[in-house]
Figure 1 (spheres, helix red, strand yellow):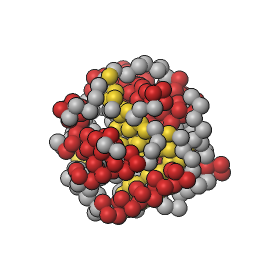
Figure 2: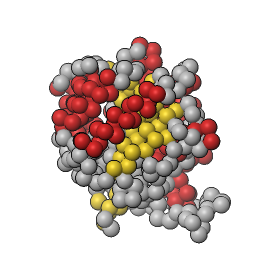
Figure 3: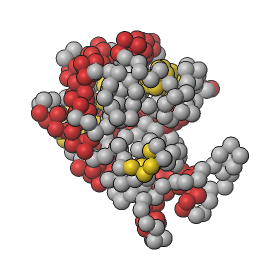
Length: 343
């Protein structure tokens, strides 16, 4: 299986994350990519290739232009103001302050364009996000052109990024950008299957009123798990998109027995709705020892996940989402890809 990767994804090395009332070193770090790449190469899964450069046009097909411009200029503006540390939102539009007008001050704009205080903007953030979406687009282009599976080793991840908001370590929604690209290349309907522990709120928001992308997510119950405010089972789409958004929220502590039943149902829905391409938002943070997640999948379970995805029989692109810097992140990613290839 061809893997796409770029060292440009390592340019973002944030120092700051708000977690448990403390500023800590972020769980999302460059070492995640290095651990995955090490195992991809050691298991000899196939060639590792640099991505093409696609520019911003595919990004603007799913993201707001002013939002993209904000991400591009934020760090330089922050530095020009003499701010110390990294750019982190500390006030947001809320139910009682709906944010009808976007503020001019950068603090107000940070709140407008962010959804959580876990994600700072630092040097290299925009460049890494650009490289990450190029990886996703190169991977899906390879699958569309050659009919072969591909793996995009994306970083930053993408599935929490909405039309005009970043958070959860995500800036550009790589899976959404790739799905839209596939539609623009002539596919009628694309499935995005999100197996990250955390709900892909951004992907849901982008496609919620559309029937050309089926979004299916297996995740921790939002009553207890980040991102909390989206991902309930009764969120099934709106307008033309009714029935094309399917959520499988599960209780923290769920193991593969529960999780795999949701997976099998999800794959059946993907078949029933006639999807022509499968994009897998490949979070491996459902792993039992992931530091910020609460499912109980084992490394062997990820091999079985890959086999079941392979049996779906669809052209498939895998795009890296979550899974944090423990050694098993690489083992679990490679187990999924190897399991898929074994079918």
